[in-house]
Length: 505
Ligand SMILES: Cc1ncc(COP(=O)(O)O)c(C=O)c1O
Image (cartoon, rainbow, N blue to C red; front, top):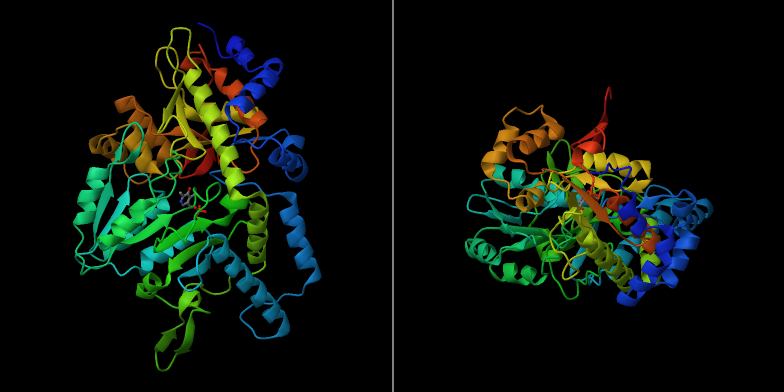
């Protein structure tokens, strides 16, 4: 058996020498890949990636910005005097115009009629989701239904629902594709009491498996008396969300995932009738029309104003309009096709990687082709004896090669549980040691007791990805062909609750 360092033979398949031929083959198999315009853009607007020899493959974690976005934003800030938009003076009015212009641009980008939808600026997608959770009028007899593969910021809404007496129903996924179990969903949706508020939440694209759930589910649920919350955070960076066609009641997005900059701004897109049913649990500066200390009364503002607590991130909001302009110039369709082509190639190559004994190196969670899936690919690696490689060590080794991957559970525990078919008893054994155990201990208990993995490796491609990035990734991954899982060295860091922990930290 060879060690990882010796396993050059397979890596040789992805040598510089073979790269040109592989690229030609890739182009002939993937005509959707736009080799001219976006490659050119990468050279001009994202040149820092190659200058620093970074292989960025975490677009589901965060998108990357083009340098022109920064230049345009800095130019705007340098030539304008802008004040807090809550005042009525000239600098405040100038700022208000920019914020309202960006708001209109967001609605326009998502093809949402301003007669029908409201765009509420939030700190991020989680902020949008929290608004819905804390203000949705759950009550005894209500239901909160959600698919297994939601991000924790959607899972967390169950705590608001439970506190107000609603019942929580998780819609299972079917393995191995990790798509919704339609029969279970139909049963759950049919149980709603139509005289109670009911909320159904699902991701337009899973940030774990890349699965894109059918957007037809929106109308199906609404027809049965449900409001629908569509978490579009992982979908919109490389897919068109057309709100003139699809009519979810609530949509959550984070703009940094779409175009990298600015961070700190997300959005809740809400249908006006659904928004009117929300009941805010408090008021803040900017959310009321009138409040009195002595009378102990307040009147809430209407529309987006009722949900933007205090001062919005006003200097950054114009950068959202700039970012949307950047995407529009490229077109989301072109980004989509390119992401799809790169995803197809990664999947194909991953599945072709085998040890000499014929066993697969890579296990892909979810769909293994590009049918109804996006550019997020989650995997684990197994050695020739079928033993799991520690994903944390794989990440450390990737780090040494300047490859940015994501590992862990990606704040999406349900998809991981479904993909490994973990039972409730197996998971509860992991929780048994109490609240201080943390994720590293939890996964070690799960792996020790069950031999299953409670974490994985995620690769995601996006707006600035090119063939060279994914070729480099394949070269790295193929280095584990014919390598034993205990020959790659010890893990040096851990990830707990999406935070990296190093010894002594
Ligand atoms: C599908 C999905 N929903 C919600 C979120 C939360 O986004 P944020 O961390 O920007 O609030 C993420 C982040 O990864 C996500 O992928």
